[in-house]
Length: 77
Image (cartoon, rainbow, N blue to C red; front, top):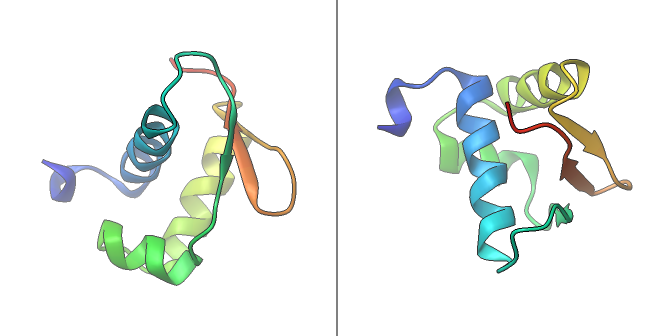
């Protein structure tokens, strides 16, 4: 259940679902076309918690920035 996961897990799952919805198994750019506030609302987090979780995922090498409003999943561990 999404509400029982920590913020990093919630954001990682959210990005994975967006990537999967794009319809390919190869890593690709994930455009972030919705605001941080909307992502936070969807994940039942604060906007600051979303940004902190994304920073943690970048620092861990799990995701990388692919432009000003896009990400790529770099490591699926």
